[in-house]
Image 1 (cartoon, rainbow, N blue to C red):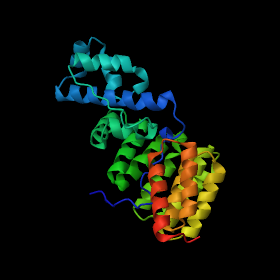
Image 2 (cartoon, helix red, strand yellow):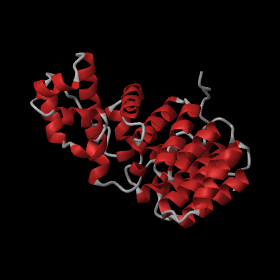
Image 3 (tube, helix red, strand yellow):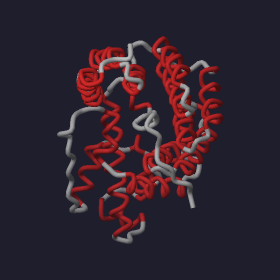
Image 4 (cartoon, rainbow, N blue to C red):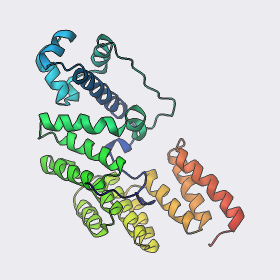
Length: 289
């Protein structure tokens, strides 16, 4: 049985993904496309069709169905997938009323309960599919199965060394399991590489989370300073530092960080909530500064 453990407060919401960078059309298109592929693949399984039977019904070649089951999303357009949804008589509902932040798209459009069996099938068909391990690892991570997530992140990086940014996700999973030394090692190895500014910043943010989990708040603050220096326009470092400042009852400093987040990302609901909370607590308790 996989070891399950509640995520520490410092690690919540910190799962790093390429989709957490600046929004682009690809950030919105790819999760929708993968959702449609998962739904179609699951419907074919439900009907107990062979690939040949599914191809005949949809009016395509058998290799097209093979591409679908292998998770080759680049081979499909959303238009073609929506047409298949219609031919299969499936109901399609996509609710985007919650906003437009790309990092939350996966959670609105699908559940990890659907993602895990889908990517397991993709991996079974093509054991060298690094994206399959990466995305299943994220689903395990979100479900709190950190041991399984670590295994998938590791396998993804073994298959595709270009996915070294997954060391951040793996480090965060290690933190949730209390294995801080392993988390520090992953972050240090990533910083030593010639990674982009955002990834370097996330490595320092993750090191800060590990320091916080050990009660080393002063060391955590130094890590956040490094994260901000690496990528001054990345809201995440200010947000996480602000949360730590709030816990330390340094409400004025916390408010400054949350305001900085909102300047960079005006629609950040989490920062808005924390800013209001810091204002309220400063009025109630004063400020340690």
